[in-house]
Length: 210
Image (cartoon, rainbow, N blue to C red; front, side):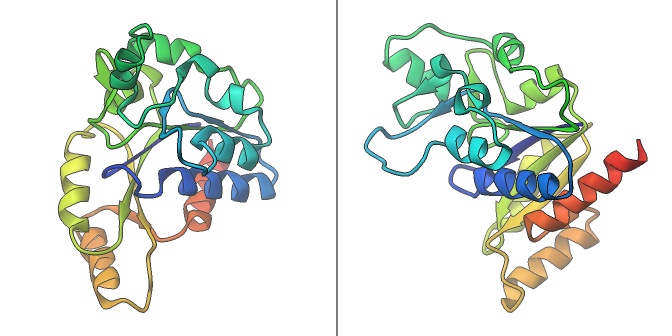
């Protein structure tokens, strides 16, 4: 099963959710792979890179999660960072072809950059990559508070034709707004999850039926 994870923007918790889902699935005995086709980062930031976090969660080498030549030490969208750093342009087809194979994995979790329409390559974004990969599910990670409903609706509009799940990050069941946002989205027909374990369990159940 190939699952693409995007978000309503940057810093909404995509990597945290992918890592949490991967750990839960592995605890259940599933083999899981994570892929970050391209990543960019602030070289002055001491936090682990996304590929390092995902590799720790899956037990893989960070260079398998994200090819070294697709890691850009500049806090811009990957194709912009590549241009500014004087590195070669790349396209969606190249990113898809460079994903390391994971023949034994029941789940391959692919994390995009930014939101679904944030530039991921010179000719496309995470939506385009999802089409090329023929994914089974797209997860949209969103903050749980103010602006959640609009952000989710705008992002999922460009994902028509895909099976979509919504992951509410930093969800607090004691927060009335968080609860109301979740209820509104569920009433609107969205599949909504408030913690990675529940989403991982749903993925495992779906995979078991196929």
